[in-house]
Image (spheres, rainbow, N blue to C red):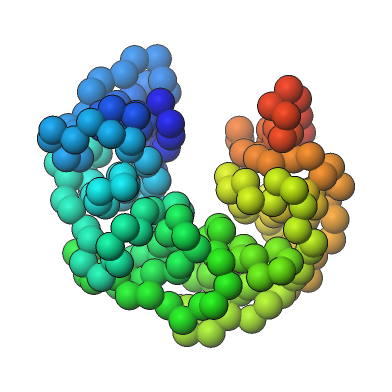
Amino acid sequence: MNSIEMDNNHHYYIGTTTGTVFRSEDHGKTWQKSTDPSPGYNGYILLKSAGDVLWASSNKSLWYTANGGLSWKIDTVGIPSGEVLSEISQAPDSTFYMVTNDGKLLKSEGLDKPWKKLNFTEFVKNIYITKTGDIIINASGGNLNIYKSSDNGATFNKVHTVSVAFWSSYSFNFVIPYKEGFLMLLPGNGIWFTKEFNTYTSFWNNTNLINFNKLKDNVLIARDVNADKVYYLNGN
């Protein structure tokens, strides 16, 4: 297993190193083998979800399923040869934004529409899209820089900057909705709180954190870079 994702119906999917995808409809109690994205392919599969669409990526291609893994379609039009999916997110207007493993930012105006590279010069690490369509990205260009776009990616404004740490290259969960705003994890710089992605305050200055997730409303878990500590927060 190398990746696990959940769709809007709370179905879980696992990608493997042998080209196989598994699915669970009972919160992981039982698992069934899904249709393979590419029959005969037996290499690494990375899964990423965006709404009800599940994406599968390898060093060979990119596929998606919009029916829970019953069938898959290849989706590589406009993607430069050799590019591999790293992150993907869906905007409210069903536009998709993809971050590749070498830091490029691509945009597709819908399923089966060609991908187009956006004119962004820094190395993009993570992407998050709000319910109102604001695009938030974490990019490195000497520092870790947070950019915000409110015009569908036409322009990006730098809204926050922190210094690079040794493990800033780790890319896991980036933003989690929390109470009246959002929490943002920047490895090496702890967790920050923001309401509109314009101003930021330090929420927890634990520089060893590299990943966090939401268990339920305002209840979070986080882990550190050494994988020997797990933290729990009940924010209710």
